[in-house]
Every structure is written in C-alpha cells, then in structure tokens.
Length: 251
Image (cartoon, rainbow, N blue to C red; front, side, top):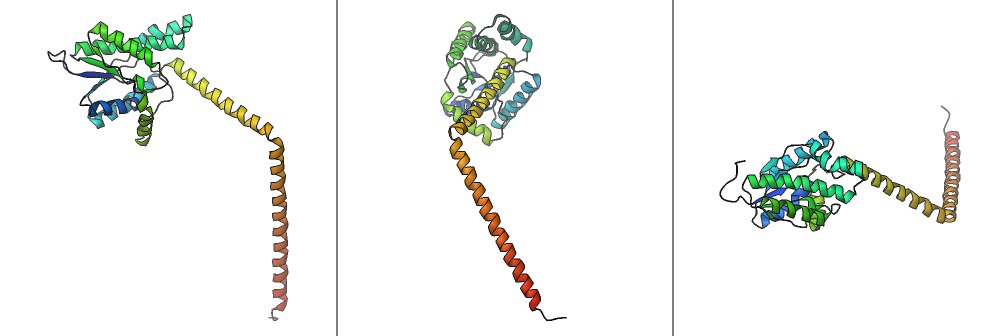
C-alpha cells in the first residue's frame, strides 16, 4: 500500500483470524465502511500454525475482495512482552493477554498512522473467550498515542453466526487463541471437561446401578428367549425337511 496520504483512508481492521473476520467485515460493509484488514499476530505459535491461519485469512480476503496486509511475524517480540514475563513472574492470564493486545494494537496503530488511516478497529472482540473490556482499553490506548480514532465494537453477538458461516464454508478453525500458553491451557481445559463428563457418567451409573442391573437381566432374558425360539424353529425346519425327503419317490 502507499505511504500516508493527505486524505484519511478510512478504517484499518486488525484481524486475529479468518473466522473472526467474517461478521465484522460483513456488518461494516453493510454500513458503507470498506475496511482494510491488517494481520498482526506474532503471538501465534508454532510457526506452522501461524502459516495455516495466515493462508486461511488471505484466501478469504482475496475471495471477498478485501484489501489485506500482513505485518511482520516477530514471535521474539511477543515472547519479550508477554511470554517471558508470564513464565518468570507468574503474571495472570488477563495480564498476559493485555500485554499481547498491547503489542499487536501498537503495531497496527503505527501502520495505520503511517499509511493515512483515520481509525483502527479489531476483530478480537468477536470471541467470548477474550477479555472484551481489556481489548477496548488497549485499542483506545494505542489509538490515542497514534492520533487515531478507536473504532472499538463488541462483536460477541455475532460469534454464533461467524462460527456457523466458517464451518459451512470449510474454513480452518483453530481450537486455541494462538500463543503456546493458551494452547496448553486449552488442552488442559478440554481434558478437565472430559474428566468431568467421565465422572458424571460414573456418578450416574452408581446412582442407577440397580436399574442398570435389572435392565441387563431383562436383555439377557430376551436373548435367551430368542435363542430358544430360534432353536425351536430350526428343529421344526429340520423335521419338515426330513419328512419331505422321506416322501420323495425313489430314484
């Protein structure tokens, strides 16, 4: 894209991924706003995951005719601002995410200011798993420092539609936020949910043990009755066959 222009260019939309971009871009276009998408996500790890998400959003942007810009991938910068402090000082998950938002919004705001955009928005608030108010605070902070309008919007009401549309289109959908700590947390939370479901099934089975045993006895009785019936029918068929053989004239 060109360098800063005399006339503001409109909105630069920081995008975290393809699925989360669907509804914000659709709604903004319905309002007469044509955002350019800025992909600045050095938090994503490993690099192969970054590349997969990048290809997904790039392909979608091309199909939709959305101007797309990829920021430099600088995982070491993310590690310095969020990863290392989290590991060293035990910062909370919210503080880690705040540091991550801050880094990405500062980079997006710097690009927007340098290239003549009037305002900066983000798709991060689509997800109900993010810290929405922290996103607002950090976006407004970055925009104020860069002399931009903060185009924050709580996109969470569109999450279900974004999920449905991305699945229907076969778009790659990641199952963790992006950084290595979030991946570990997501895996741990999924395992905890699986354990909770197993515990609930075991609890239910213990509470209904007598009913389950009685149902097992009924099934076994039905199988025995069926086996006896099948044996009886087989015997009848064998007798009939023998009678027919006896009734045949000698060759």
